[in-house]
Length: 166
Length: 260
Image 1 (cartoon, rainbow over the protein chains, first blue to last red):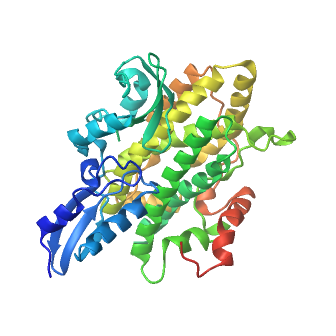
Image 2 (cartoon, rainbow over the protein chains, first blue to last red):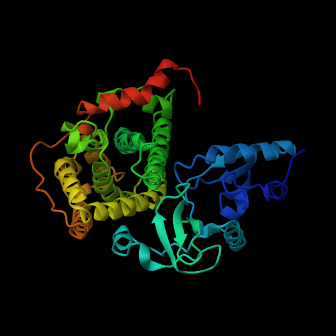
Image 3 (cartoon, helix red, strand yellow):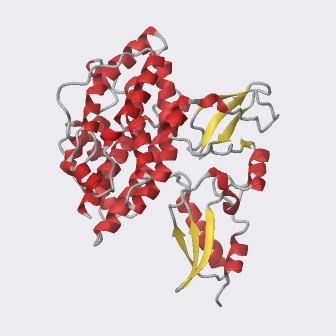
């Protein structure tokens, strides 16, 4: 049986990210496209961070989910355009917050390296996902994974992860 | 094609060698947060190296793979800057028990990240579309590496008398190696000619501005760069690279058919 593009989307709709299982690959913007190529269907995924150890797992998860439903499709990894946290859906961001991870701010438009350097850290407050306070402080630019920074709330005293704009 | 291959290997080797070097902190960081930060920086660098090696493997064809490029080339075939292969003990090598000096790590990461943030940004316009795609990803990562190392440079430089003295000593030790950035290798010249690469001298004024502003904030003195200009990117390395590669390559060479 040949599956349609819509059936592939439906099969992968709820497939969760292996690292942050409350959010789906589609909501994260990792699942880019399902397209019909000359020799069958292709599922296009894009890596987040270059060294993200979850990418292999994600590819396997996509493949096995489709296989379990009897759908045959190739998984293609595509680098360009580069993944950005701006592709994360609003619903996905809300799920992150509810899970205790502060969702990413919008990436600054057209900022060059020189601009990035001249305006360190301060710029935008990162609200605490637990109590909502904006009185928070960065403890480390790298949290449990490369995509997150470690913050601490000065009001409720809870530490939390912030998904960095990428 | 050869211009692209040589240039891509230079970029890939830089990322792999520093990624491997910084991974030495994994489990040995001065504090837990920094242990994790260096491991994450290494993951980014090794991920960048992998994308570049995969691209080289595609260009070369045949039985070339990313693993062959990383694990089965010898010292003289690596094209990384000498700066990146130096051990973490830096100028403290004469002291017993100081095999890892965090000031040296931070200074090196800062000097290199400042360069790469500018270079990746410029390479987004490379005539090689695959390299441009890798650059567009890498620049996002290296900006965080730069922010991280810059913050710590200020913290150490403008910290205690000891942290100030040690970071200044690391800077004095490492700064002369940055001369290699600005001396063109034949591979770079060919890549620039082909529109694939970027002439680093067009980025030097911005690099100087990033470095000088950070050093001023860190109350550190910029050393005069002079003396021998290293040639790691031409394959002429210090004795340190051989030890680093021996550790990194031994497993793959013991099990050459291994797949992981």
